[in-house]
Length: 339
View 1 (cartoon, rainbow, N blue to C red):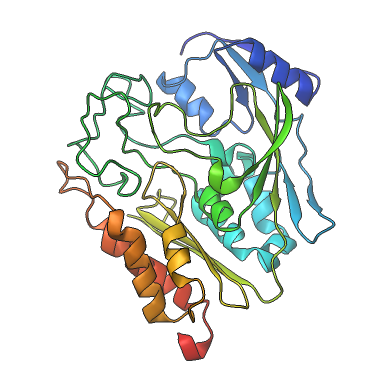
View 2 (tube, rainbow, N blue to C red; view 1 turned 135 degrees about the vertical axis):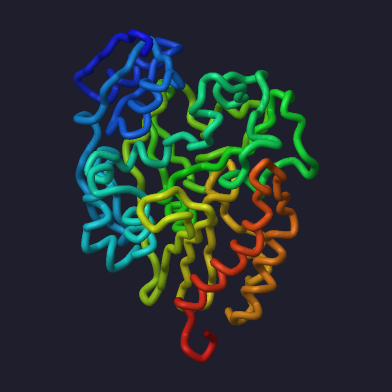
């Protein structure tokens, strides 16, 4: 592990200033992802700034009926909150599917959505990885691709030597639920406060796969707001994985159905970011929410999917798996006459 300086500032503003002033500084909250990367040599910061006790641990009601999750609130705390379980069950279910109880006790609301990919090549510093070292190549292309992206990738097989090539997927279960809920991310940075709609927080690789989010250096998540949902809204999270005990998703689905039949849908395990299925939502808008309608909408969403070949027979299986998982998830939220 590379030696680094460690700071415990007195407040959030000081923490932001400390990180902004050092180009190779990082924030530390629960540490469930960062500490692993420090040990592996994936993360090599010069300064680690501890913010765990600076941001709020509270989960508080908002005047409009929403809920504010303080950035230091733990995944266990949020999953167990009766308000979350009753009004936003998709989030509680995603958190409980995400990790062991020990990890949920440490992982935070502000840190969980910022965890980095579990791509085996990203975590192996002996292999080329454009996310870890831009311009070095993408070892996943033509390699082990079972857990890799089928959406948001180039239409043809990427050139692994291209600096923008990356087919890694985002690992967070919580983030998929927050994307479906249209949560709002409250951020403090050197330029002041701002709010980022959760579906816009994460980015595709573009010309810089090393950047997972739109946050600028020194910006810190201080809270995430859950919007109020109409009475009678139903939601659910379903995760398909290689083993039942705390594996990362091959495919996951977060679905929210409002009383007027509007469907909000987000997918995990299929793209560089939590994938909001906007095309499927558009196809369904104004239609009665039936199984046949959902089947057609998800087919439209997956029309642009690009499976990746690999030494493990590739990940083309994800495309029909997404369709089946979406249908099974939404079916459980529909009135009996439509299910």
